[in-house]
Figure 1 (cartoon, rainbow, N blue to C red):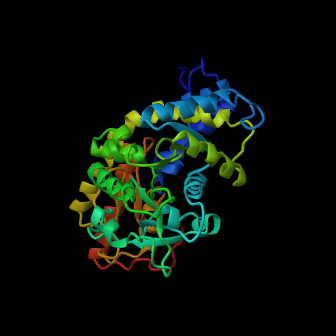
Figure 2: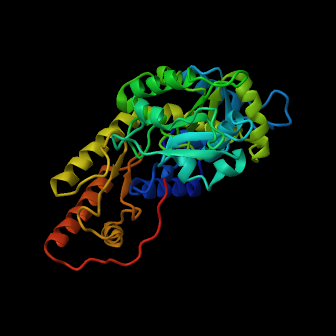
Figure 3: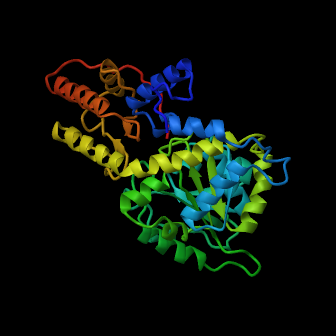
Length: 388
C-alpha cells in the first residue's frame, strides 16, 4: 500500500494534506473514539468499492455483502445487515424483537439505547424500560436481572420482552461468564403459551474492546445473544455505519424497519468497503490501545487522581468531584496543552491516539492537580459538551 506522503500515493496533494491534518487532530482528541479518521488503506478501499444500489439492485451491493459476510464470520451469527449508525442499528434490533405492547426492556440505567439515543426506544417500539443499577457498581449480573425481570401475569406491569446488555459500557467489560449466565436464565424464563422467549440483545458498539480486553472468543460471546449491533465508526475507525446480526428470519424482518427508519441507502458500498478495511487495520491495534490507556491511568493515579470506574479497556473516567476540580478547569488546562476533552472527564483512547498527546494530557492534568493543592483559584464556570 503506497504511503500517504510518497509520490506513489493515489491521492492528490490537497487530499493528502487534509488526511494528515485530520489524523493529527484525532491524535490529541480524547473526547471519544468516534474522532478517528480514515487511514490511506480505508480511503483506497473507498475508491475501489462497488457502487450498486443496495435497495433497487436485486443482488444488493457487493461491498456491503462482503462486510456483512465478514461480520458473520467473526461472530458466528447467521446473518447480518448494514445500518447507517449505531443508534439506528440498536433501534432496528429492538423494534424487530418487540411486536406488541405492553412490553418492556430490561437494561443498565446507563445504557446507550436508553440514555443517548434521543428517547427512541419508547417512541419507535412503544416500550417501557426497566432501568437497573448494577449492584457491583460496574456491570449487570444474573442477580441484577433476576431481581428486575418482569413476568407476565400482573396487568399493572409491562412484561420484559428484551434484556439489552452493553459491552463495553463506559469502558468496562461485561464478562463472558456473566453474559452466559444471564442468557441461560433469560432464554429459559417462562412465558405464556404462544409467546416467543424473551430476547437477548447486545449493544456491541465496542464489543471488540470487550472481548479483546477480557481475552475471550467473540463467537462464544455472540452466542449469548439473539441480536447484536456493532458500531464500525468508533474504535474500529470507519467513517460511518454499523452492522446488526441475528438469525436469518430476524434479519429479513429487520430490513423492513431499516427502511422505515431511513436506512435504505443507494451506494453504501463505499462506506462498507471502508469499514471492512477498518476491521482488518484497527482491531489488531486494540491491545496496544488498552495498554496505553492503562499506562496513562497509572500516571494519573500517581499524581492523585481517582476514577469512577475501573480502567479495563480504552477509557479513563476521572472522578473530578473527589479531587474538587471544576469541569471547566479540567477543560481549560487540557486546552492549554492543545488536548481536546469533554468536561465530564471521560478520556477515550483509540488507535490514532499519539504518545505525544498522552504526555501532554498527563502534563496538563498533573499541573491542574498541583495548582489545586497549592490553592490556585480554578475556573469554576459553566462547561458544556459530552457524549457517550
